[in-house]
Amino acid sequence: MPTPSTPFTSGPPAEPLPADDPELMELDLRGLRSRWSATAARSPMTAAAMTGADLRAQRQGVPGERLMEHAGAAVAAAAQALARDTDRWGRGPIVILCGPGNNGGDGLVAARRLAAAGARVVVALIAAEARPTTADAARNWDRIVRDERITIVHAAVGREVALLGNGIEKAAIVVDALLGTGVQGPLREPIRSAVELVIRARASMVPVLAVDTPTAVDLTSGDPSDPAVRADLTITFHRPKTGLQTRNGKALAGRVLVAPIGIPPEADRG
Image (cartoon, rainbow, N blue to C red; front, top):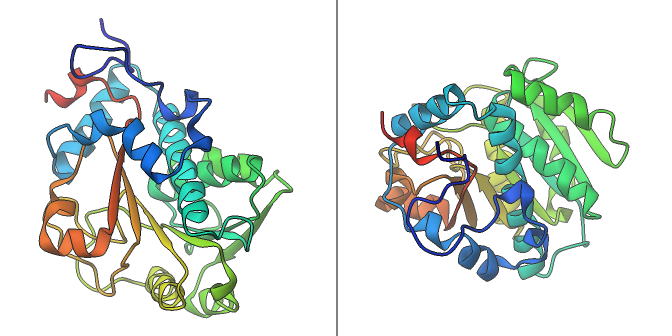
């Protein structure tokens, strides 16, 4: 039975998965693209196919928490590389806007790893709830609230998001880990205000990194939410996504990295 890190093709051994890669945080964007080139070369998939592969991987014994750890490690590496490549590393905090679900959970893992790398990190939970609503994200929330290196903010309503935005132009980068795919039409508060904050940050020349997809660009169709994040860099996982290859998707995602997270090939075969 193949292990979760089994490569999709024969040939040289696969590079280590992000959470197990000791060199990952040393790579620039070019290096990350090269590191994950085999993953980016896989055939694209829809949002539903990704959801199915994730669930099947967990049924096959890959813990969801481990998938999140690999995804968050990849986000941290991409965030550091983006900050360094734009000469902003160490010039301000990395602001990570986290929604209440697993997309936000990836951001929480990234926060922990970026803090360990020496970054100033601000995590904002953008949700009516006082903590994330999915089990894996909640476990990672419990880990970072005990981390004195990370500044934590909870913004439950639009007014609190607006206060968070004071001085956003001083951020090194902003990470959009608000929502994944599947949201249609106008966004609700406080997510709407958070997206408007990201838009304002980018207008102030702060680079934006989107996790999986810019909030909430559909990973199947590329259709955007209202309003929509426009990212400088998007990191998505396991395989390219059809929605990020459409005209709208390309325009909103910016450059795209595709990172492996340990979903085995068998999980793609529904």
